[in-house]
View 1: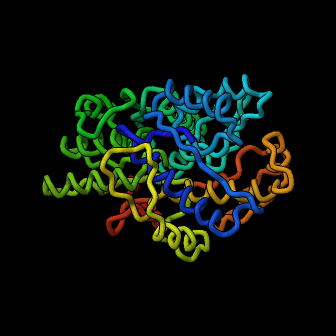
View 2 (view 1 turned 60 degrees about the vertical axis):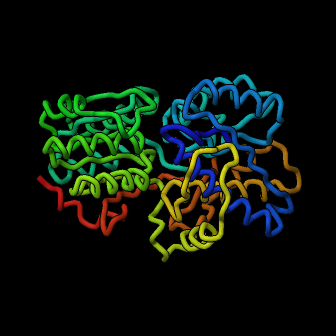
Length: 378
C-alpha cells in the first residue's frame, strides 16, 4: 500500500489505512481468509508521484508482494500505471485504489486494475444532474491542476454537455496547497462568471480554504465536492474556523460519497464497521506526526470495505493463492454482499465492483444524506 501518511493530505492515507486494517486484523484474528493471514505493507509517498513510483518498483521487484492494494490518489496511481504493464510477467495488479480517475478504468491500463468504488465521472454526473434539476445551471469548477483535478473537471464538462450546458467559470490550484493558503484570487476569478454553484475537485485543505474565503467575501452560493475531498476532515477545519471567527462556514455544502453514511445502522456492513472501528487502536508506524484518530469517517469506511473485498478474494483462492489467478477469481465474484445495500459485481470481466454514489450535506454537525435538494433550488 503506497499512500500519503504525511503532508497536506496525510489524514486521508491514515484513515484509509485504519479502516482497512480494522477489518484485516479482525479477519486474521478469526482464522484468516480460508486459513491464510493477510499482511498489509504500507509505504509513505506524501501524495507525490515519484515516491509512489519508487515504492511500487520495490514492492514488485524486491518484496515480491502478492498485490498492490489501496493506493491513494490520482496523481500517484496514474503515475505507476505503466509499471503495471511493464511488470505484466510478474502479474502485478492494483486492487481498490482510492481514486475515481478514468485511466484506471479504461484501456490500455484498466486491465491491470480492479476498482471497488464508483468513478469521478459517476460522481460528477450525479452532482450535475441533481443541481441542474433544481435550476442551478451556471456551474463553475475549482480544481487541482493535475490528473485528479482534470479528470473531475472533464467529468463535470461531459455531464453538462448532456444538458446542453457548459462550465461557466473555472480556477485551478497547485497540488499540495494547505488550508492556511489564501484563495481570494481564485474566488474573484470564479465569481466573475456569476455561478449558481461551484463544484470542487480538490482536497479537504483546498476545498475548505476556498469555502472559507468565499464566505468571508460575502458569497453564499452552494459549494459541492467529490469523495476525495474527505468531507469529515474538511468539516472539522470549517467548524474550527467558524468557532474562531464567530460565523458558520458549513451552510450550503454538498459532497458526493462512494459509500453510504456510517450513521446508517440499518445496514449490517455499517454495524460491523462501527463495532470494529471502536475497538481498533492501530496507526501506520510510518507516520510520526501528532494525530488524533477519527472514530468514524467516509474514508475509513471505504478502506474497511476494501479490506472485506480483499478478504473475499483471498478466501476464494485459498486452495491455490497465486497472483496470476486474480482475474479468474474476480470473474467469479457476482453480487457479493458487503452489507451496504448494494452488491459488488466483478463477473464477466468487470473491473469496477460498485457504481453507487451517495449525496450528503451538513446536518446536525455532520455530513448526512440529502433529504431534499429543493432547499437550494433557484
